[in-house]
Image (cartoon, rainbow, N blue to C red):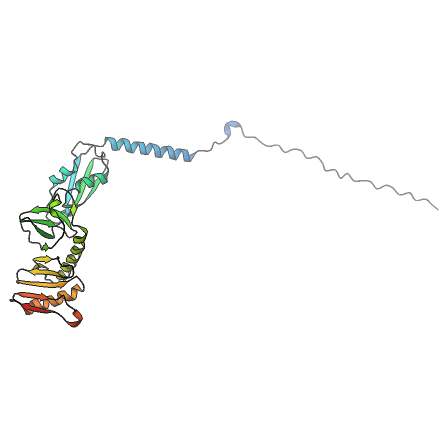
Length: 280
C-alpha cells in the first residue's frame, strides 16, 4: 500500500498584534483653566456689605424728624413736642444709636400713646407715626375723674367731667397707681367687666341710643345697671347675655314711657317676656 503521509496543518499565528500606545496630547501648563471659587467670592461680598452697613449706620445723623399723629384724621391729645421729648433724639444725634423697638418703647411710655411706628433711612430722615388712645369711660376718684380707654388703660386724672359714661363699682385700687406717669391698666376682674360694658355700648350704638348712658354700675356681676340721666331712668340689663334682645326691649320701653322717671327691668327671663317698667 501507498503510504500516505499527513501534512502537518500550518498553525496560524493567533498572537494579537501589539498595538501602538496612543499618544495623549497634553495642554501646555499655562493653558490649564482655573476654577473660580464663587462661594468664597459671595461670602466676601456679604462680609463687605455688612461692614459697610455698620459703618453707614454708625455715622448717620438725624437730619429731620417727622411726627404724624393719628394719621392726621382726628384731634390729638398728644403734641409733637411731647413725642420729641419722649423720643430723646435731636437733629445731629446718631440716628441708629437705638433699635426701632427701643425707640417705640420710649414713646409708648405715655399712657395716651397706643402705638408708635418708627421709620428711618440712611439719609438721616426719621418718621414717627403715633396712634393715640381715646378716653372712652371715666371713674370717680377722690372728687376727680380718672379717664380710661375701652381696653382698660388708665390715661389720666382730671378734675373735669369729659362727658363719657361713668363706670361705678370697679375693684381696682387707684390710690396705689402712678396715674399719668406710667402705662397701667385695670385689674383682671375689672377688665372682664369692661368687656361686658363694651358689648353693652356696642348694642346701644347699633340701636342709636348709646348717648343716653350716663353711668354703668358693675358692682353686681350678674346684673349691670345703666343710668340714663336725661330720662331719669335706670336700666337693669343683666350679665351681658342676649344683649341685643334686651336692648331692643329697653328701647321700646323708653319710647312708651317717655317723660316718666323709673326703673326698667330687662334682666329677667326673656323666654317668659319678663320685662317691665316700674315708675317712680
